[in-house]
Amino acid sequence: MPTLSNSSNPSNVPASRASVQDLCAVALCTAVTVIMAQISIPMPLGVPMTMQTFAVMLAAIILGAKKGAAATLVYMLLGAIGLPVFSNFTGGAQCLVGPTGGFILSFPLMAYIIGLGAKRYYERKSLFILSLIAGTAVNYLIGVLMFAFVTGGTLAAGFAACVMPFIPTTIIKMILAAVLGLKIRKRLPLSINNR
Image (cartoon, rainbow, N blue to C red; front, side, top):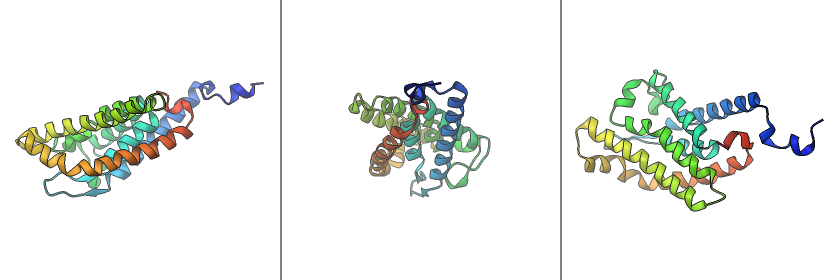
């Protein structure tokens, strides 16, 4: 008969059950990203404002680096095979190689960086904040580089179209994702968010 300490320890969860939990958590965060992608506001310079990045931050904070990146990779692959999961119910490989494709392609790396910081939140809060900034910066960097390459424009034009109009809303998304994500993360079994 298991003792109380053994039965309450999430690390004693059988491997198969933990795998099912992992799959369900990754699938749920992928679904949230699909839903959030549809909250889209067209912008004058062709780059829409969506809630995708909020969902990526949230997945990374809740699930951690590897599983957060996995959730965004699944999202990206679903869109690549043609399912209408990207903003405005679009899909297909052309979305990944178009002007805004770099933002989507950077999601797994963005999630991984933020997830690393979330794991160490209670040890060093400053590291978590830096990971949010660094993950977002990577998203912007890859997005701007691809935007400039595909459109044939300059990096300055890409920065003006893809970064400047979004800085205020990005800060709000980071704060909301941190507050909500950390609250959810605290309530989950360690087996879900410890990697």
